[in-house]
Length: 298
Image 1 (cartoon, helix red, strand yellow):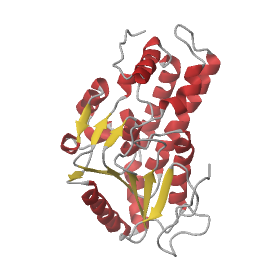
Image 2: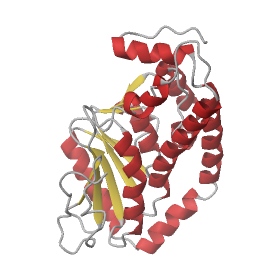
Image 3: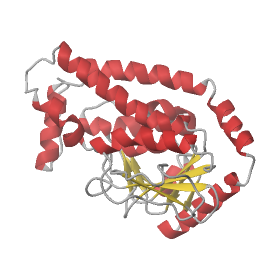
Image 4: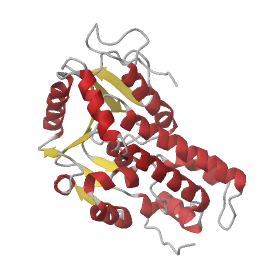
């Protein structure tokens, strides 16, 4: 998926030909920041709100593997393009083919369940690539951060937000168990009680509460102030010994990532067994009709 104009880094000596900075990505723009050794990854879409379509999930692990391998990069800022970070998974593009083979009352057979299991694991691996990147990742969040967007920022090392940012673990409204990492990673970030409240209610929370519960480290008055703060923090990180910073991240990840991996395996099996339901089909219909879903637990 190498279409469109290449995103070339600003500094001539930053990266090499054929690197993450010169490759033409579809779902991302990868550029250098004014600060030395800092890369900026912008989500591009498709559509309104940087939804996570098929190209996003193909390219996400490739982008972060390339950043991990590029020794000129010491810190990464991940942010959205336009007004929003991400409005989450593009359900129709990613799950549409699978859903199209099912109908109300039909039973998902082994082939469909196996296909879904593989799809979930692919999505999980993409987000895990962010967490396992040796370079610290700062998520700079403006506007909406919903569903898959929360999964993605939960894999970042540090989260910053602008005052108008809003967050939602939205999956329960869609008759889905969140399965790409937020349930596993946010336990260690916001604590058990806040995580359960957000996941069970699927409510939206503002940046003020997100900061109060530790979902974001700090919030800023506007998107411009947010990016200035993210760039300054990334520059602070990049000025330190890259070996020591990478080692610190590895030590902090030790043990935690093993627990997260077990949780991801469990939820992938759970959803591949139970995702197909009348409630899910009702949720998809409700989205198309722009109404509240009415669920019966079937």
